[in-house]
Image 1 (spheres, helix red, strand yellow):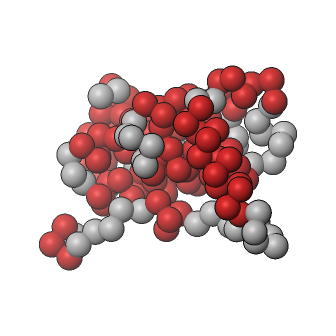
Image 2: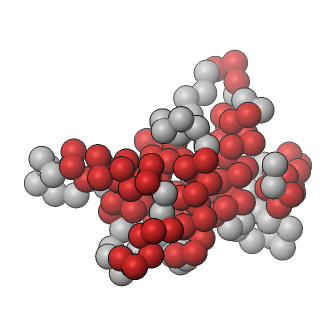
Length: 147
């Protein structure tokens, strides 16, 4: 596990708030590693909080291309192609304005993300308009005894 992600996790244990050591929002790669850790320890509540932060950062925050490419590579290494992280990376790639991801940088994005993005785009072509991406799509279902 990433040391920075573990620091965010330790802080979260006490405050139930996701923030880095300076009190700010963690970077996308730290959040991705924290989400993977939460999945490993079977903590869906933490996964959902992290996913909300990831979603806000990738859609509403200041978009950092280098951080996004790193996030895509973390998502590619995690799971078997059916990961929420991979799905989020592909969705961001699919629906981001062209200015966010430069054509000459496409080699930095793993094939799994590109393929999933293409599938997403291909499926959306039947709709007359763009489907907005809601964070609910990526949340882990929590049973009553996990609250």
